[in-house]
Length: 260
Ligand code: 13P
Image 1 (cartoon, helix red, strand yellow):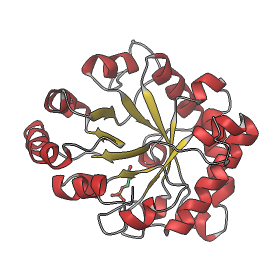
Image 2 (cartoon, protein in one colour; image 1 turned 90 degrees about the vertical axis):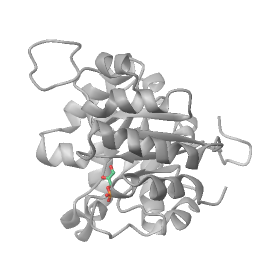
Image 3 (spheres, protein in one colour; image 1 turned 120 degrees about the horizontal axis):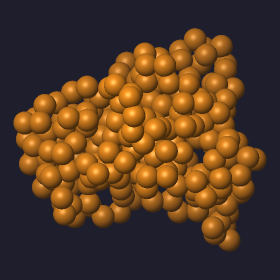
């Protein structure tokens, strides 16, 4: 619901995407170092997305803590002859509560489209997962001033036919491709402006109140030294962290060191 001031307090989310890094032994070592560092943090959601093979080790290590585990991708069918794919039910059974969907690396290298992202999102929701749906423009689009057009197309292509109830359960991540793994973070102001724009698209497509409750994360070279500036933006409801989530100390400092 929109508060009378027009401002809605959204619970922040700090999520780490490990991509194709870490073995099971690395996963156990990460959690033994990370969990004591974030013990007592209760005012934000903490999510880690390890590679599929590390999920059982991560779930076991994070059991009884506030840290939730996420898949990095999901397939939309429940089962079948789909070599190499993992269903939403399989992620749930393994102990995941979230899954990333449509990460730019999936869109660029593995054929994810707005259409498959929508199917994956619906399947994840049906299985009870919280999808973290990713959108973001490439450098050439950014330079050509096409950021809003690309993000709107990916966002609505990925969510247009969700029901309002389904839409209320997704998280959105804005990850400009030019900022991923490059060290070139979008400035807090650039990120905030895109989030604001995406929220306005959500309001136009769904409703003001669903838009006001939508949590939008920023991703792209988020580090301990830029987290304060990013999270100071009211429009940023959290971050999706790649490289800096691999190290327990740096990820813990991202979880903790921002203005509450
Ligand atoms: P980096 O933080 O390494 O730039 O990666 C961002 C990302 O792609 C998270 O999903």
